[in-house]
Image (tube, rainbow, N blue to C red; front, top):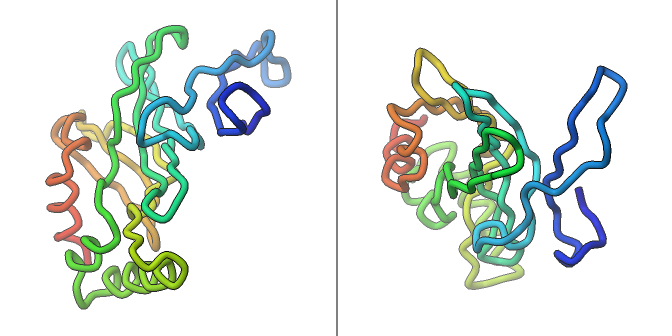
Amino acid sequence: VKADNKYGEKSVIKYQRMLSATELAGNPRTILKPELDYEIDGCEDARITKIGDEYYIAYVGFVEGENGGARVALAKTRDFKNIQKCGIIGPQVRLEEAVEIFEGGRYGDHYRKILEDVRKTFPDANPWIADKDAALVEIGGKPALIHRIEPDIHLTVADRLEDFASPEFWREKFRTLE
């Protein structure tokens, strides 16, 4: 939701309980707002999954500018009143590094073109690769992330939820693509 509020026109994520398929309870309330460096320009595109007793909210943390980007972050809650932000759970790879990881392949060509296009306007730019449209699920008792890293949609499975926060985990996953 983009709103004229004290967050300065930045996107926020709101919660509103449904009473039925056509009726909502009360007014929506903000549950995630831009506070941290990886989401300073917006919290967007939330998807909620219940695993065990907790609700996991995968969302896009957005930072504008030539070195910014859209990255998948995670928050969790049991009651939608107390929400804990868990940080970035998607790739923390900048375009220059992505070009190196995928050198010579389809992904490398894709990221090289994006970087060249960005640098026409911002010569020293090196933004994060865009990661969006994410949902956290469980497959065979393991955490899995369904997400869109252009130009494709990916299913990434980890042994532990914490693995998704590791830049090295993502570098290894990237090396196995193509």
